[in-house]
Image 1: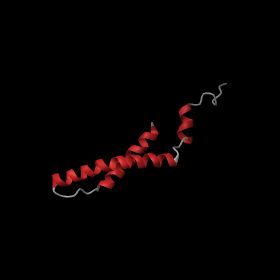
Image 2: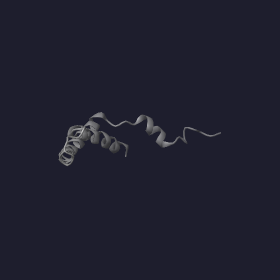
Image 3: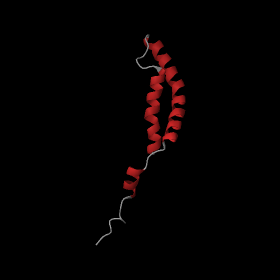
Image 4: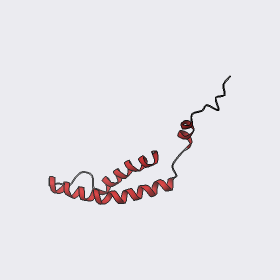
Length: 77
């Protein structure tokens, strides 16, 4: 007879019960947003000059999108 409690995979217990603290997530999000905004702003201006019209997504929306994509990657690692 085998004891299934002893042979439980370690990653299964972490996958369901582990969540990143909200405050820490928002701090990282804010730092990444502040870092991404100047880059997005310069990129937005260069794109506007190059194409002669304003891009659909503004610099803040672009920085927000980047921060929203990058922050969860930090917490998954």
